[in-house]
Image 1 (spheres, rainbow over the protein chains, first blue to last red):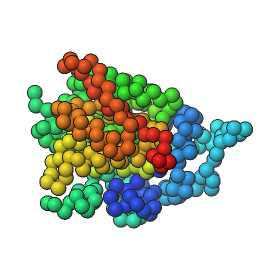
Image 2 (cartoon, chains in turn orange, brown):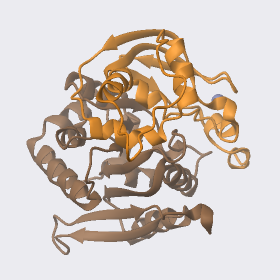
Image 3 (cartoon, rainbow over the protein chains, first blue to last red):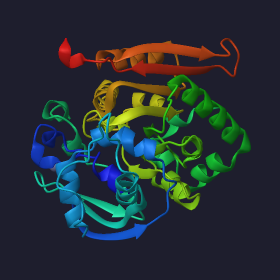
Image 4 (cartoon, rainbow over the protein chains, first blue to last red):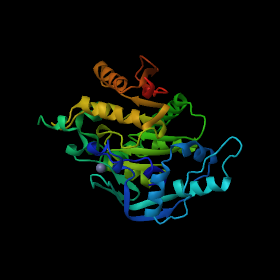
Length: 137
Length: 206
Ligand SMILES: [Zn+2]
């Protein structure tokens, strides 16, 4: 699972939808690999506005990366982003992948296991559904 | 021929044997490829994008997304299918998840979504505590929210009948999507139905 995806994913438990505590999910026992992905600066420029920078900083620290800038790099008309900044983001967001470990919700404590890079987001029905839908058994 | 979704829920139907059959059938592969290409054409993305593939299976569609320069995340309820995707070195991230439980991503993140031959499964409710309409609304609400404003989804599906076709389309509209149905090769046995969904620029502004 790419670091980018962890910045997109949130707890699937119904009751966690309305709380900010459920994002980002927190890594435990993560095993990392670096895998080469074609570098496309336009892709990074495209998604950068939709990255939650504070959450990315939390994730990066949990995985042992401490060199992320404190502020999100922003491009302006006069000053496009430095290619090296884009390349560094590419390496962190797309090439750094978690193959084994856990993602844990800080709100409900649900643990999503990651095995061979695949995160298991299947939930028992009582967690996935609003209460009203599970009362008429 | 019985339809797979009439026999068993997808996580049980696509066991290792069925998953392997599905992935190695050259007929299915070529149909799946052409439908993916069609969906990409309808999405009309003009730059490398972040795409959600719903019911990604063994990553057949994902290969086209990758070769078109996109980054994708696939979700599927069948662990066997995802295992084949791993064997085939799918470039996308894979998530074991049930679309009927929702789409577990934070709001406004994906540029686009694609789905090939999957969403008719939403009409099956396989346990007494889950209704088809509940699964449909959780899926479309989640999909709507996970797409960015102005985002688009193209979902090819095989409705069993007119009722199912209406049920799926109206569930999408109820979740806020602008929706259109596109039929390729109508009135032939190769007809293909695409649900084309758009997220308006601002539900928030209404
Ligand atoms: Zn939670």
